[in-house]
Length: 312
Ligand SMILES: N=C(N)NCCCC(=O)O
Ligand SMILES: [Zn+2]
Ligand SMILES: [Zn+2]
Image (cartoon, rainbow, N blue to C red):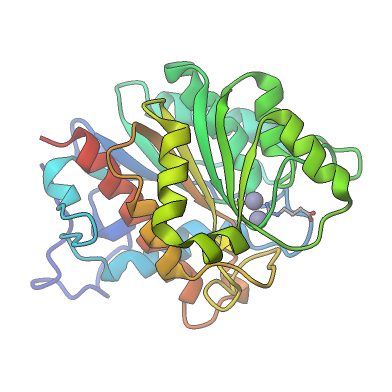
């Protein structure tokens, strides 16, 4: 097992920034988990900039340490975790980008490697779900987001960051018995947005629900719905309050704290996690790396969940 560069020997601000200072994919014979970047933001409806997230999150991840007390695991000792670099996607053609992402994610997973993807805007969740469902069939989905992302089209376009989960339901790649949004809030276009969303099969735990019920009750309800199904977790960083994630493209007031979100994610231990993404970090609007740090910790906890599930 090749672990991260030892920060007691090489200062953590020195050398290239792979995720958590892990080896690159080409430096190992087999990877159990790969962190991969998708620098793509052509699908956004408001502020652009998520194309710069993979490198910003990697920089912020230099401070991660090898033992995760929140989950009592040293993920890089249990599994071979690597940085698979970025998927090079066409910024001028959303349709082609979606095909490239699905193809690259399928190839990366061919030998059983699990992916934790750093976006990119939320458009990329669709091809990632397509790739993961080729292996596992329809998957349960936990979607952390201020937004529903089940709208139909923007300016007549079906593939945007506001529409991936409607497309995914239409594709039949989600197990609609177990798909939930967590953390939604903010103004909608109309009440019909919620009716359409319900018809697609989604359950909703709003940001206010999380505040009223607390982390433990929230986690219990989510776990019950998911059971032993293969689970994909998609985290739009704007699920956090703008105070905790200012660096994002479509911020909404009234979100969760990073502490609450990290605790909910840790509450997923033992579930059958098969893949995950952290999307919508837009570093140009960030301050003091608040958002990139939160994203790097979330990715670290997602890798840790995979290590708990699959480690030796
Ligand atoms: N997926 C994110 N972050 N945002 C979707 C917002 C779509 C809209 O502008 O209505
Ligand atoms: Zn969002
Ligand atoms: Zn989103």
